[in-house]
Image (cartoon, rainbow, N blue to C red; front, side, top):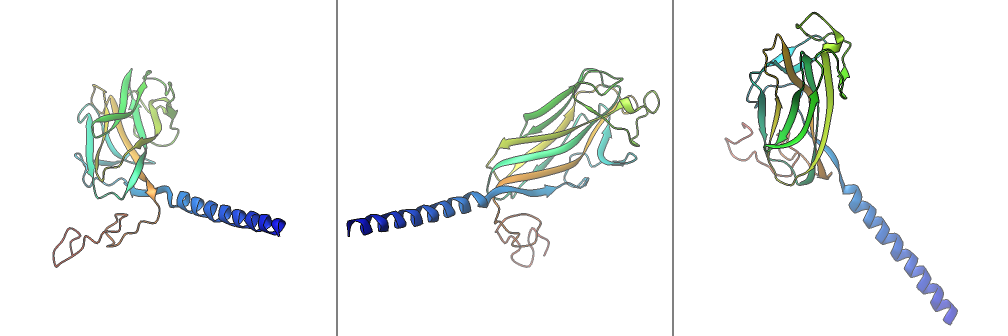
Length: 215
């Protein structure tokens, strides 16, 4: 009888462990990265709406020293604990010890210096395709880019994203821009777009004859 009780206790313990492990994995699985916004080179909402076909790419920009930054406000985000920002930042032509920068809510989250006007040194990549670069003739070593990926702790349902440069010459001499912007959130992967407003949340904002969704 005593051996049977020990055996029953062992079986119950194993079953309990299996159930607790299953629920643990289920909880972990519900937390994941989700693409919340893909910019797709749209000028909508940006403080400067210039979009340019530069050859192989469509970009925000290109700009010289004016404007030296542009920004956009985002809101109505789903519950999350982190956000990930990815983009391709372009530093073209005669950059010399100047910086590309990205901010969230005016806090610097990424910066990188291009140190040589004649090469994509210091961690920048050289673009060998077709990309407008008017300074000193067409030269691949003047067409530099960096693929930005930054993860920050973030819980608010809104933020302001700003891209910037410290270059001090006009666009014909040196230029900056960006494309391929994607914003991801880390949180509940089960959120839904309840009202088809392209926002991953469970709130139906489209109520009434006139509302923010334009119904």
